[in-house]
Structures are given as C-alpha cells and as structure tokens.
Length: 187
Image 1 (tube, rainbow, N blue to C red):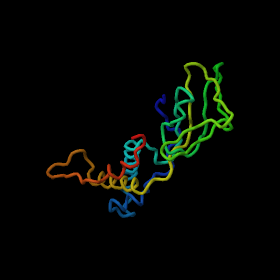
Image 2 (image 1 turned 90 degrees about the vertical axis):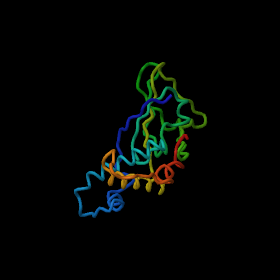
Image 3 (image 1 turned 180 degrees about the horizontal axis):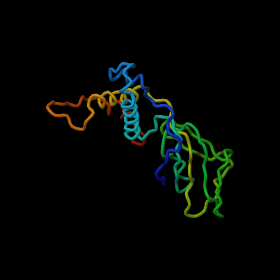
Image 4 (image 1 turned 30 degrees about the vertical axis):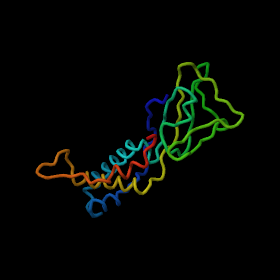
C-alpha cells in the first residue's frame, strides 16, 4: 500500500512557459504586471491536469512510502524519469538503501514499475516499517495536455472570480476534459 507522497524537489520548469501563457491570454510581454498572476495560473493549470490525469507532468523529485517491495510493481506516479533511491529499515532497525544492482526501473509510460534483476532478492525489512521510493517523475507533456493547460489559464485569466453575474455561460463540449481524458492514469 502506498502512502501520501512528498515533493522533495519542486519542478524547475513548468510545462507551459510564461510567454505561452501571455500569448494565450493576449498579454503583451511588456505588460509585466500580469507575470505574477500568470505564474500562479500556470501552476494551478498544471496542478489541475496532474490531479485529473493522476500523472506528474512537470519533472519533480517525489518521496513515496509504501508497505512492501511488492508495491513496486505499480508505482504511485508516472511517468518515471529516474530512481534516486529505495530506502528501508533492515530487520535490526538500521537505515539502508537498496543497491542499484538489485533492481531495474521499467519506464512503461504512465504505468512504471520496479522489478528485481535476475538472481536478486529484496532485503528483509523491519516488521511494520516503511520502504521509501525517492524518484524523479514527470517529463515530456503531450501537445493536447499542454493545450488544455493553456485553455484553463486563458479561462482563469478572464474569469478571476468564482461567480460571474449578468451573463449566460455555456460549457463548450470537447474542451479541457476531452483533451485530458486520454492521458488519465489508472482509469
């Protein structure tokens, strides 16, 4: 069983650049007073796309605790970029790290896993302790996911409050959800 993860190194680069958000919102690059707002909207749009798809789009380091090595057959996040470490408490309660020679990463798109290398076995862990996988997740963002993020940014830029009065609004079918639905993990 996987437990809540912790981001140990936040994304250095967002999937949507400030210039792309400015273009989507019709903001001139010289209008720098919108940059802070657009930066927040970029992060919010990425967060929405990541939650909706259950996918990490911007590369970031995440520590994820689990109960046993058997949990590594389906990682809690995807796509997997690299493994930083797999740590655990041995039977004597000493902190240990699994050697890279014991396992291999299977970077199967949105459904990555970790498997034993031939002839290897997982170490014994202290009863009741947790194993922590620290890995870099995220990577390239499909064009339609990036476009969905841009649509959200544009919508939120124009509609900055939760309620709009005096207008008739209609949801456009085949919009953000339609762009994201094909990239849902575990759906």
